[in-house]
Amino acid sequence: MAEGGVDSPTDPEDAFMTLSNDLRLEILLALWDAPDFSLSFAELRKAVGERDSGTFTYHLDELVGHFVGETADGYELQYPGHRVLDAIQSGVFHQRGTVGPVELEAPCPDCGAALTFTYDADYIGRVGCPDCDERVLEWPFDPGGVADRTPREVAAAFDRRTRLIWGCALDGVCPFCAGRVDREIAEGAGSTGLCIGVLEDLDRYDEYFARDHPAVVSLDCRRCSFYSFVPVGVVLLQRPRVTGRLHERGLDTRETPLWELGFVVDADPVVVREVDPPTVAVTAELPDGDPVVALVDADLSVTLADR
Ligand SMILES: [Zn+2]
Ligand SMILES: [Zn+2]
Image 1 (cartoon, protein in one colour):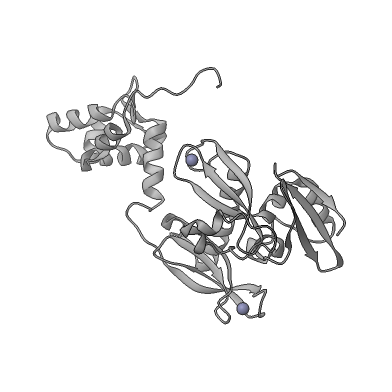
Image 2 (cartoon, rainbow, N blue to C red):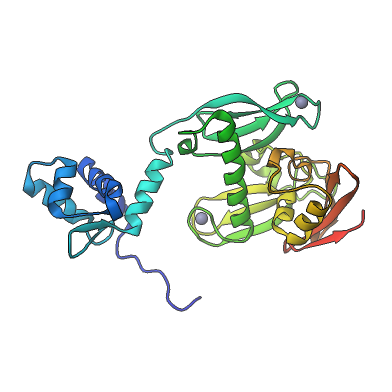
């Protein structure tokens, strides 16, 4: 345990109850719209249009101290207030978005047809092949990401955000609650080795786009509901020794979208070399010849190897 710690001046139930009122949300939104996120009492009351002073004061007081801070000049949004608005703007509580299918400038790894991106009302972004039904990449995405973007820009944002979430979680930090994430290499359904069977027992793994990979990294936040899997090849994207080698050989892993990185999304480049403890070889094919092979160990350390 680190020195310090977490205390809970408010129960989560009370905090959510505090927000369950139109006028209180309007107060937060008015402060968010204001210069420096702050307004005087009179400005704030005018902004939300509440005529009854007693009603306004009562609801404002309920927010003060946690979501809203008092200043010499009035009131300002505090960090928890910002986070409430961020969650609202992500759209997940009250919106649904749909996009596409939009054709991407990338061929299906199986049949060569153009891949498409779609975003459906189930909050999942999907890159796949309309001809052979190959599922290349699927991950949740927030409806807020659809606003003010063309369909292709949504696909690009989906690529960026998925990387960010994967990278943060693979580093052991939850991208949603900042808690500790346990990471473990687990054999997948595509394994031809001694399959440990754990993943096959999980219903949600049936739906996982990379369930044909022989191994995946399982991610489990100790604090919140975040629990998922990522392809082992994603680990390579976070290792400068690997990305540097690939860059020297003409593959820019930052500029290339995830669905074009075969060592991330395809099953074939992933081979389980050792089971206990696990070592997984991931092969990055390069247009100019010899592939780059990286070995990922149980602790997610990576070494470059010859094939
Ligand atoms: Zn295809
Ligand atoms: Zn978490």
